[in-house]
Image 1: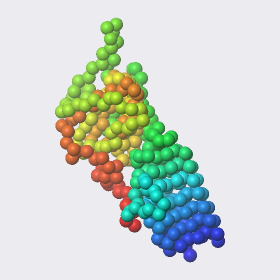
Image 2: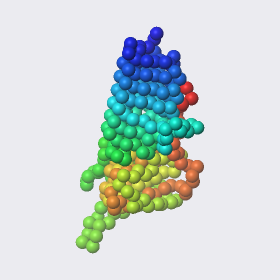
Image 3: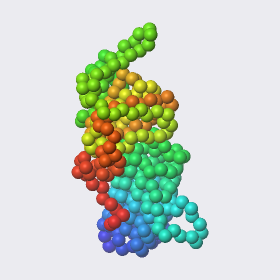
Image 4: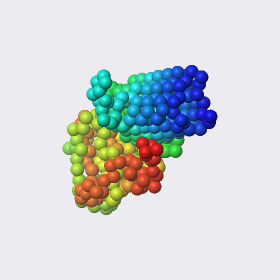
Length: 319
């Protein structure tokens, strides 16, 4: 046998990868599929319609019910709870269970609860005790009940995420660490009549806009953006309040704090943009290089990775 089952463990499946360890009082049903080099700890239960990738750690007390897919390198903390039915009744079974997917490299903390049919994005982190009621974006950190985004994780291969707030006297344009994403500082003229900031298109702002839009009255826990453009360029100015912007080209990410009307962030095409941490009074002005075209948007992160970097996430549900 190329995998290990503790004498007090029960593994009925033959679809277990090389080097996987199944410990005492764990129970794996016959149709479950488990990859290689996994560590399945005491008192874990894995139902039939479950797919577990490679190098997954499942700590004590976790139950994986029908309809759950766990991709590679995922960590599931002690007593993390998954659900697969929004309206469970005893002896009443849906025609199909909602599929929950935990993407590559994600971590779920101890005693967290994941509602059915959600996707936990790659390398996301769910805080201990959180109740996750909506899908979690890639690299997001969520916590609380209901779980809300509190930040974005920086992995070892993507360390460029310093929050930038340009100080007076700094260069007018600052590189962020993500190629092409630039933070601009405009003149900030103070006067007894009030303050003024000014910029010129094609000179300070690197394109002539075809469109603008304003984002305001956003609740503090909400996240905007979460998409990329194939052709359109954008320039963001927070004219009131503050907002954090995450820029991601699929290889590197950075987080920039826009907290002054004299700051502007240039986002070229094929950069995934996210805005969060809105203050109550925030008004975000966005200039766009193109008129609105729904076909210019990339709203799925896996599709973004495939189009912009050639990376592909495997569909474990079909394995």
